[in-house]
Length: 211
Image 1: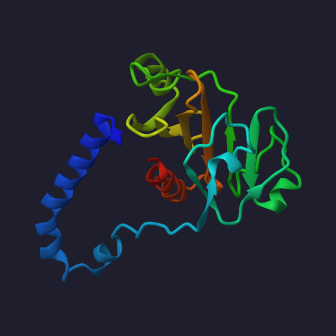
Image 2: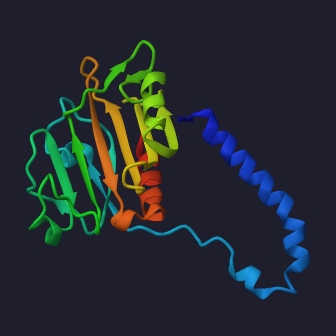
């Protein structure tokens, strides 16, 4: 698994900032109790269950792929209809949801083979999402873009998280090569109420599941 360089740079700069701030924080700890209470919250714990991706996609993939999708525990496969798509959400939301009106308040996941993104195995590039031209277009429509590439996985993949410039909400999506010609499929996750802490937690679990 390889992250693009600017993500690594961000991690390094954050570590340096924390190290430089440590002596000052220690000196003022006794004088200012409110400062201690402002510490960063612990990572959120999200209850998920593993669903084999072929089941998640309702048998739409051309081959069996060894990937378990971390589906939030309250989500079930829904009957929301859109050709090539498979939607997962809370059953009570699925009762009224449509492909054009999805439950953003409580979140949802979906997968699809209906994508124009193709995978070039010779150059390890997902054209339409991780090639330079596509990334430049993405930078014009979103902020806080983070990309993880899995070039050496059995089924190469690219994962993207960002803040949408249209909605101001975090967005998460992954493209993976199916192994048939240059075809791909994608997964997407919408966290409840746009909560980035929950979205990041689920996305980290998916990244850990790619082999």
